[in-house]
Structure formats: C-alpha cells, structure tokens
Image (cartoon, rainbow, N blue to C red; front, side, top):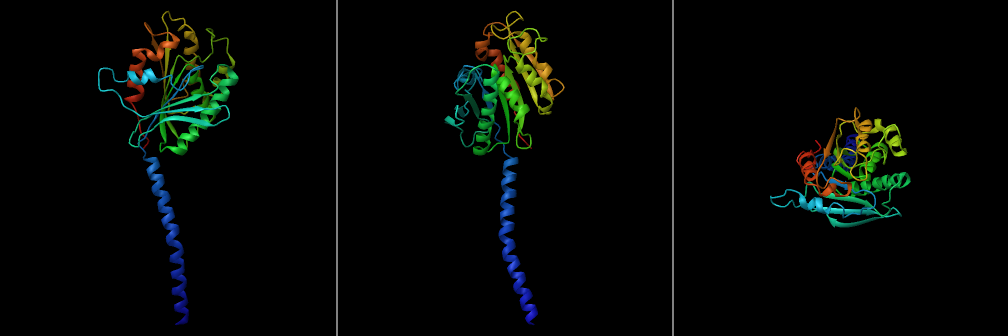
Length: 275
C-alpha cells in the first residue's frame, strides 16, 4: 500500500514539472507559427551615394497617380558612423507593406565606403528583424544602393531567417564608371566572385536610364548591363529594362513616371508573402 502511495506521489510531481514545460513549448510553437505566417512584407529602399533618407520621398508621392493616394507607413533609418541607428517615422500596426528607407551617415562613393555601408546594412536589417514582425521583404536600390544590396545578399544575408522576394536596382553601376566590361573594376570583381551566394529564388529587375544608349549622364549603359554577369544563372529571374526620354538621367530616374510604374507593377503589385 505504501509503495502504491509513493508511486502516485512521484507521478504527481512529474506531472507538475511537465505542465510548465509543455506550456512553454506551446508558447514557443505559437510564436513561431505567428512569425512564419506573418503577412507583413516591407519594401526596403537604399539611396545612392551622397543621398540621404529622404531620397525616395517624391517616388512615394507618385504612387498610384490619378487614383486614391497610396498611404503607407514610412520608416526611415540612418546608420551612424559609430554603428548606432537613428530613426524617424513609424510603421502602423496594421500596415502589411510599409516602406522602409535605410541610409548611412557616411554616404560617400568608393569601394571602401560601399563595403562599410554594406556592413551597416547588416546592422540595420538586424535592427529591423529584431523590432518588427516580418520574415520576407522586397528591395529597391538606386545607384550604389543596388551595389550595397547585391554585396549584402552575397555576404551577410541569412536565407534561413529571411526571404527576399524581389530586388530592383535603378541606375546601378555594377562595373563602376567603366563602359568596357573587359576593364573589370574592384567592385565588379567582388560581386562576380561571390555571385553563387545569391538567393536562388530571387527575382531581379535592373533599370538603366539612357537617352543615347551610352550612359545616363553619369553611369555608362554597359556598367548597368554588367549586372547580368553577376545575376544571370544565379537567381530565378533577371530582367534588364531600359528607360529613355525625359527624366532618364541618373539623378532624375526616381522622378521618371516609367520607373514609378515599374516599381508599382513589379514590386508592389507582385508582393508575395511567406507561406
């Protein structure tokens, strides 16, 4: 009889110890389920050299011309030289596709600076994923912003934690200011050498601005075209699009209605959420 009593006591203790562990496990499972079913899918923008966090304001205002103005949250981040993050704006609680701009206090051109800016992008992305509930996003980079995205995807991107649905680069000089692909620059060699690290399911659009199929006033057409040597056969889809006519110079591409339409059709309207 005493033996049976002790067995019952032991069983009771085991149950008491098991229930909290089970509850903790269930909470963890539920948390993971919320994370992976998250419908929040931001579009994250990076400006080019010498541009700040306000670079895309006109583009945001041009969305859905002639219709009800597109109202989306805009969060702006500037990563300081000391790795600290400065923010302005906010993301509304129910906004499923907010805009996020990541800029850098040191926004200068050059291989060393772009390398540093890529590391700062990693810091910014860690900040975002730690503070906002999303596991997938789309990306847009203007000029050197496209180089920073490409370098980040090759060096720092963790596909186990995040999914990038699509990337659009606008006037990105993949071979710096060289018009001859045989004259490979340091940045091109860096990106070409590590291209196999690019996400295989990524969809990429590369926009080139030109009035004469030579350059956009700054970036040679052939330098934008060099992106195909980095992305083709590495990602799911790579498409180069040429924009001509008014506002096709390097500095005015983001004000070009054709670019606005391309962003709307290929990034905004084709938004995907993680399964």
